Image (cartoon, rainbow, N blue to C red; front, top):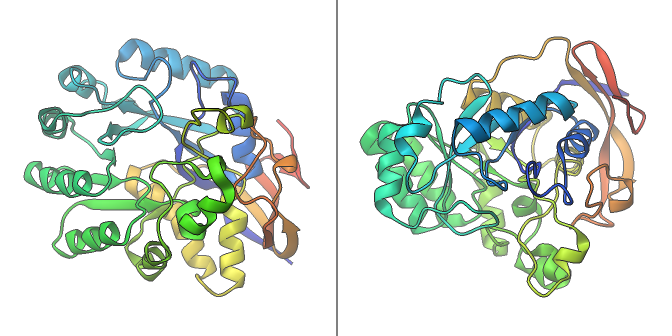
Amino acid sequence: MLTTLPGLIDAHVHLRTPGQTHKEDLSTGTRAALAGGFTHVLDMPNTTPPIVDRATLLDKLARVRERAHCDVATFLGGTEANAATVAKLAGHPLVVGLKLYLGRTHGPLYLPHLSSMVDHLRSWPGIVAVHAEGWHLAAAIGIARLFGRPLHCCHVSREVEIELIRRAKELGDRVTCEVTPHHLFLTEDDARRLGPLSDMRPTLGTTADRDALWANLEVIDCVASDHAPHTLEEKRGADPPPGVPGLETTLPLLLNAVHEGRLSLDRLVELLYGGPRGVYGLPRQSETTIEVDRSARHVLSGDTLYTKCRWTPFEGMPVRGRLVSVTLRGKGVYVNGKVRV
């Protein structure tokens, strides 16, 4: 029996365009999105070059128009020197927010100084998404409160962080958050098994951290894949870059959690559609739905993926629940395991 859901939204992806298209590109990444049930994705700005001004933004959006197979919007990236200029681009309809990297991760964007974070939170007129862990997360929540800015906390992974966000919400702060499937379903025990394929930012947490995310599920606004593909050669090299693919495994993992009684189907829809729409004020896509077979059994495998990197940290995991079709604005773009665009 098939269940119809709205086209899903992934609020955190890295489509690697421009500059890193050997890992992924707009065509392969958006095909992977459709194969995962996502009809709208929000792309991160830490590309090469990063999306940090008008010229890089317009170049990125021109590439999107030419090559994307689903809806793509983008973040602008904050640097040490662009707070005033980047704020002028906030009204662009395909800019969903400003991304601040307050901890080191893959890519050229990193804000090491408190003054830069303050400048951006003072001048940016909309929502600010942060890569922030530990003390950086606490600082971002506090400074956003001082300036009355809405703050979105990306890929929350630790017990203390989700408890901090819960308290901030209880106090009325304008704070939202997301978690990733890899932090919901994997721990540092899996990292030892997976080796460099588990290297990501934030790193995998303890069993207690993972359990705290599930225990505070009502605090979480959305699940986002943080789809961050790298080639197997890079991951197995001397200096493996952090990040794992996730566009095509997020939905089956959560459908399996529904089957196991860990969350309801309504909550799944809220985490993968209503939540990200609300956080970023995204438009509704007309005549856009997906169909899933909640009883179908299959095994997750990199061999079946559309993403260019073709591997997954969930290799060999059996799941219950599978995507059957995707309709985007009245057109069938994914049918019986095949992307048709």
